[in-house]
Image 1 (cartoon, rainbow, N blue to C red):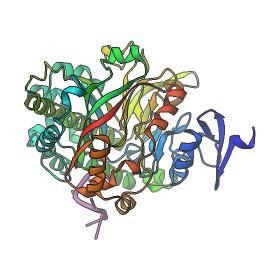
Image 2: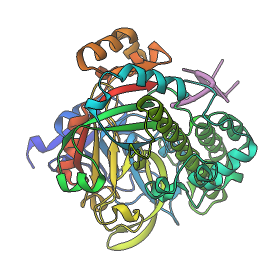
Image 3: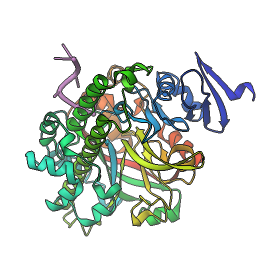
Image 4: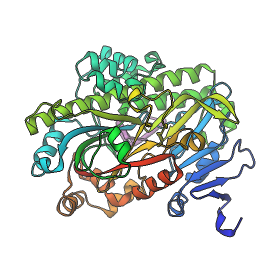
Length: 489
DNA sequence: ATGTAC
C-alpha cells in the first residue's frame, strides 16, 4: 500500500481497496468495517462534514453485516449519513428510524411522454404556470385530494391500489412501481392519529425544500439497448416528480424515535450517538415501527401517484390531446429513504436483513425476483435527480450492486452548503432569471428563498456521482435529461 | 425533510 492509498482525516483512517472503494478498518466497538464509494474529488467533499464519523457510528448498530456504506453523494444527516446504506440482521439485529430518515419514502418517479422538445418549445411559460396552479406545493396543508379518516386509512393500508379504486391511477401505473405501489407489511394501526391528521390534507402535494416537479428533455442516451427497453430516446419529454410522505412520515419518524429512546435505553446507551436510536429485531417496537414505516411508504407512493395523474390532466389542457395519446406512462418509481426486509448473501449464506437506505436508491440488476416483469430481464430503472440547473440521470441496476452495496446506488447530487449559507450567496429571483435567460429553464416557486436554497451552485456535480456509480458497476448510465420547466415549494 | 422547538 502506498501513501496515496491511505487517507487520514483526524482519527479516521481510510484505505483504498481499489478505484472508488475506500475502507475504514474495524476498530474499537465497530461491529464491521465501513466503506466509502467515491472518487478522490467526491471524497474531498464528503470529508468536510460529519459524514465519516456518522458512518463509523453506524457500524456500532447491532446486527450490522458486511459494511456500513457511504455512497458517492453522501453527506451528514440525522445520526446516519444521507447517502448511507446499512444492512442489519432481521432476526438478531435492529431497526433504526434515524437510518431511514424523517422523510420516509422520499423518492422520485419518472413519467414518459411521446412529445419532443420541439413540440414544447414556446409553451414553457404556459406549461409551468398551469403546473404551478394545479399541483399544490409549499409548506403546510392543501393537497389534490382533501382526505378524510377513511381515505388516509385506505392510502396507508393499500397504497396505489387506493388510488386506482378512486380513479387516480390506471393498472399500468401499478405494474411500474416497486411492490406494485403497495407495501404488504403496512400497519395503519401503528400510525398515530396525529400523523394521520397531518397527512389527510397533504395527499397530492409536493412540499418544500428540495422537492419539485420537473419537465425535462432527454439529452443523451448512453446504453441504446437498455434505453430502448425503458422507452427512452433523445429529445423526448419526460416528467420527474420528487417528493415524500410530508408531515405524516415526519410524524411517524419522530413518534417512534421518542418511543424507542424510552423503551430501549440499554441499546441506546451502547451506541455512540443518540440519534441512531434503534429497536432490537423481534421487539414490539421494531414490529410497530416497521409496520408504520411501510404504511408511510404507501402514503408517499400515493402522493407521487396523485401528482403524476394530475400532471397528465395539465398536459391534456396545454397540448389539447388525451394523455393516453401522449403516452404519458410511468417509467418507474424509486424510494430514496426506506428500510426493507430483503434477502442477501452474507458470508456465503442467504440471510434476511433490514436494508436501511437513507438517501440511497435500490439498484437491483436483472434477475432479482422483486422486480416487476417489465424489468426483470434488464434490471430496474434507477432515477437520480440533479439540481434544477443540471441534468438528471436514468440508470439501470448494476450487476455488482448485490455484491458491493446490498443492491443500492446513489440518489442525487448532494448539497455542498447549508440552506442558511445558500441564502446568503444567492437571491431567488436572480437565480430564476439566469436559468431562464441562459439555459431556457423555467422555474416557478412559492418562495424565492426556496429557489436560493436550491440554487444549482449549492449541489455537488451529479455527473461525477453517476460516473462513480457506473464505473463501480452498481448502477449503469442509461440516459441523461435536462430541465425545461420546474415547479417547487 | 418538517405546522423549521419542547
